[in-house]
Image 1 (tube, rainbow, N blue to C red):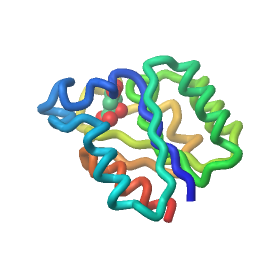
Image 2: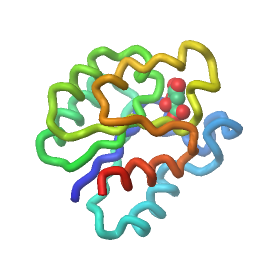
Image 3: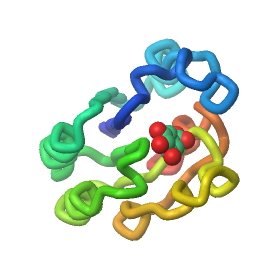
Length: 137
Ligand code: DQA
């Protein structure tokens, strides 16, 4: 079982970025725990601030991996290109948000990628990444 966790823009700042919303743990730190909790799963982590790199990564793994957990950050709300990339591959993608986007600003309520995804997890903090991986098992 091979699963990619794909984080988009500004998520490299987790732990330092608006900790009241996103918490004070870096993703690298959280990912160490995930690898122990899911020792039977081949977990890979990739982060990029660039839309094209996110799309390239979806293309690269999207015909061979068993699942992609995608936190597209703010591209969630705007990117038809990421939507099309998800549609174009065969690997199922779960949309993930650390915060409850529906309890935040109106412009975060719309997801351009949701119709292309298998499902969406939001509002459970970093624990949502565990929930998303479990959804593939
Ligand atoms: C986010 C929510 C988005 O609205 C925001 O732009 C992010 C993070 C989340 O994980 O809660 O960068 O995807």
